[in-house]
Image 1: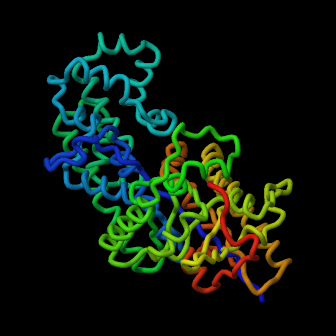
Image 2: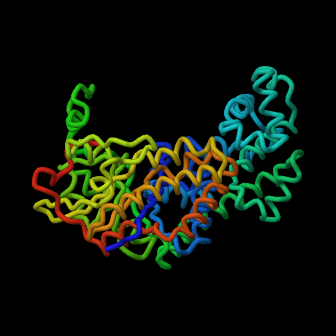
Image 3: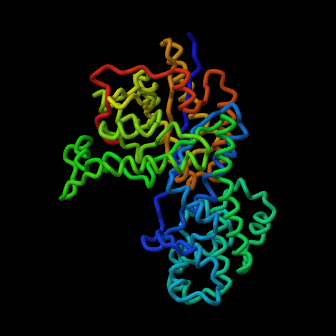
Length: 452
């Protein structure tokens, strides 16, 4: 039987909890955050990814939204989250303290300067003054206008180019300088508006069948280490471990239950897939995942290789020589029940994460499609009843900072090519395993034995 090559993209959208330990559990109306990355990545990386995908309805994908990310997005949307960057941005320049000025000069260029600073002349001017003259010079010579513009540009540059046609955003980009407190307040309002669209857009696309949204243990703990820190030695025999062994497996069902409940509340249905934190898995955690009700998990090809005691060799083009071992879901059978697991192609995932940003967008997209075409050709040469599933899984936020225009040209070129490919079909993981249930492995390969 001839099958298309099925491909499952899984984008992992995650942020740790940045709330202050004190204020994060208080009953006050505002929450103190240590860092701004939920807010900034939220305006640059979460909404645009699925909006671009929505233009290509034939392509289905999976997005993992970590509960701790969702909770923090909701704080910012409600206007109750304040990080030091935001507090400085909303402070009148004439009221900035010496400590705040030092903080601004040191940290308001926290971005990839090639993609987020250089494209904006005023932001670039201030950046190169800091680089060439030094922080002390800036503190001695900058006036209120420089601080006002830097406060504005740090926030503007993190707004995704997909939203630059918004009249207000376009006007700010055109304005370039002489930003007022009112401008900065409106930029903050625009950030909250973008953040407020993230969860509804994912919910809408999941209801339409184009997207599968998955979850992660509640605050992103590494479950095998929560069960037993000594499990680290299974993966790395000479690993340096804490002086005192730590075992607190009773927290595992709590994290899974709280993630399940939050997901069900926000998305109106039960989750099917779980992204284990850091893709780390072990036999001890499987019963908890199964009992909570999850159908499948994902991990890395190295975990599969350790489990099968098999090293995955690649040919000169970088394609796996034993594709039938990697490109399929496995069924894990335990006394608690069964669970499917898929393993990502590490190299293909890393090409998106670390390599393609340095290539022209169309060339990079063609390279990835070429790898998938080569795998599809291998599948046709080795026909079987069970089709292959290539899993490409990676962080869905950090790599785009290194791509021109936040990766938009690359993703559009990639999605356009894949939409026209007759032998490649993009699916969610649940779509595939429901249509082609995984077969149980041989007894000796029935459980995962190492951490990711």
